[in-house]
Image (cartoon, rainbow over all chains, first blue to last red; front, top):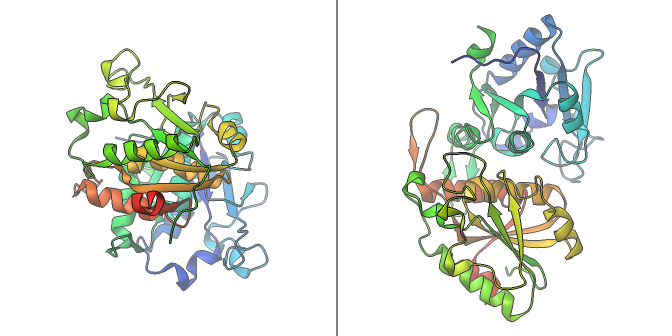
Length: 183
Length: 183
């Protein structure tokens, strides 16, 4: 199965320096930024729309605060001149932003990548699907970190990531691989 | 730690006959409906607001369709005369409904219970938290079903449930136990 993503918007969520802060813990998919860069190059070569979502945290302890160096986009995936940047203050990129209108104006189809799979990415993807946006998630182009549940069990990042994708797939989005898009 | 839920709205999500359909697979928390009934009695005794969310599926194969017997609320948790019912067609109870306005009019604080923990409940709770609603989830009063991820690994319902609660807790909501509320 291939993903029919031609002309859709590529939405990159929260891939800022702050995500490298050790406070988040061990991650999976160490090549995800390279995958996102590959997707960005693929989109730019075709002049398809690219949207960068930037998290401007209002939490005073967060490295994502606008006055912190962590607020900057990671260099490998930084916006090019003319690409839209959507600033948000909550997890979902649809709350308090124009993202819904922007995606509808662009045709109502979007491919989501970024961080964390089970946090801002999933919150945004669930809303996208429920809003009737035709929604894709690229499994190689996002990642999670280890998570401890209420019973004290620590889940490895790769498992948190896999179960988050399973929650999204078929219900809110179609989860696809990088190869299904660029090949 | 106790939950300060006095006067808040109790929101019961999708606890309809359809959830007993074997299509969903094995579940955890077999006493969840009893817990929800306990919470309903607690709320009603104090005349705090109760909101019942009913899923009116538009998927032609779903037992939740309005023309199916599964659309009926489970008897143990069915609405009483005068309680609000909010009908929805997507996972999140905020999409295409007046729920946000209703909760703001009621003071902006809500306790969420129902099904499935990692599906409509989580989609609704994530939006509630991101919309600035003071949001609680009662861990005993919701449940999940087994879930197979994209690698073919099947996660038990109790694990799917626990990781979903962990994703919500502290980020979108405060997860509390039945005892923290009624004791």
